[in-house]
Image (tube, rainbow, N blue to C red; front, top):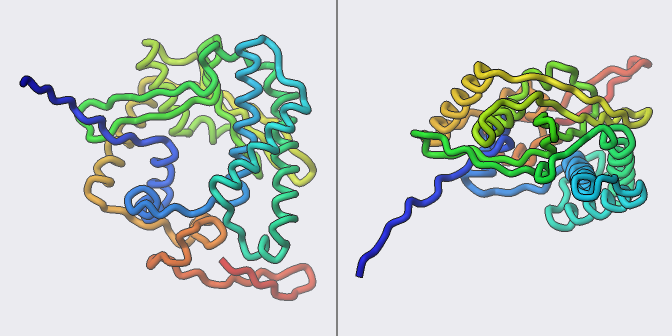
Length: 289
């Protein structure tokens, strides 16, 4: 009997994988090599809820030429938050534990709803998603590499521009879009799929200010030099993974803390030290990492 052999699919790397690897190799090793999964923090759940509500809204517009009613968007954000909470759990900080789960969840849902509402009223009306452009998935077969690159664009517009929804607690400015490796990979994916670079790339940022959420669209461009740099960084990342040469973040990096990293408690490269800030009355206020 004749047999045929099929080449097994190569492992895929997503932008979130690479971002974690570049941020902290030990975090990447724990999550994607050892398979140790930690529940997300509250900000991650809020971001997930806003993304799902925005995606649902854009998909409705792509298919029916109209946006969802505001109340439907708000309901979608609430439901998406609760689903993510039940599916993935939640990692609370010490301050959040003291505040209580119920209160923390309530505030987070309110934030997700308000951010999704701002997206619906200020950004979504300006968007013209392509029919198959919402949640556009792609795989880039990287020749000569042991890994391929894969991802999913939030919004591929009819004019070929690419938009990605972000939820931030501060305005990171134009440089965040201009230097984004994620947007460069999206531009590469568009070039591979359609033969041309996109008209533009950018973030539809929703900034969660204390005074209230604000929409800050950021638009950037990519050329083939940007693509070449991203491919070089991808190949170097694959080399690091193949060698298992994972390096920890610097302990001076803000994300190297118990607050932002679920692996800090057991990380042999982390020594969280209590810091003391002095308030306006000259009294010390302790803050643990």
